[in-house]
Image 1 (cartoon, one colour):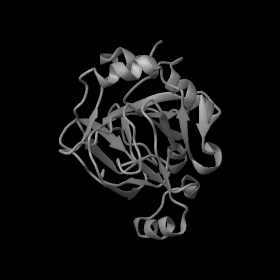
Image 2 (cartoon, one colour):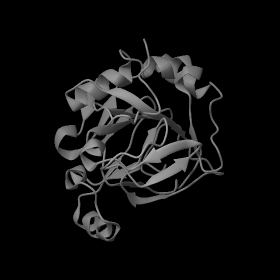
Image 3 (cartoon, rainbow, N blue to C red):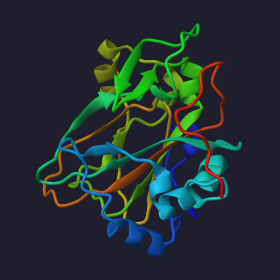
Image 4 (cartoon, rainbow, N blue to C red):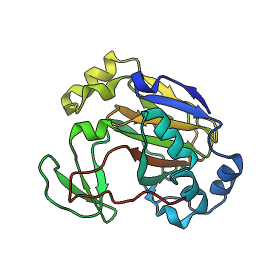
Length: 230
């Protein structure tokens, strides 16, 4: 695995030579895309052998997540994205601030609540969010003109950022555009400010997005997805 970027300091990295090329080819041809009209769908990983293998306890994505965080991590949510001419969306600057849980249980420090795709979501304490990371396996080349992820380096260290402060932080930050080749993985630490533009020449920008953490939730809350067996 070759790493470009300082994940510990900046909260992002691009990993090459991580996922087996045959697994990437099979995922492209698997029929799990297209996504919904918004270009996104949740996914039950046990329905696809390659995704289950990548996110298993000894899978390539899980090993990479653990290496980047310096402690054992496990997957807690899987999403699929695809930007196409029919679903060519832009995402404004924001932080990912909710997690998916098995069921709603009121626990101090967790809230507000929402429901997405039939799954309960809640905003947890900031320190839990900062101990999460997203690994995004690209199935297509993603240049700066194809809706690549943009990040503000080091912004994860700022904790929760008020909406009114985001524009100023972005304008003062050294924004990085994280381009990737098919088979590359873009890693991003939780609470990192990020955004993406509409693709200038939309075709496909298929991404397997897996959220990882090294933390447990405050009982009796439980992650919506448990770790895969190998």
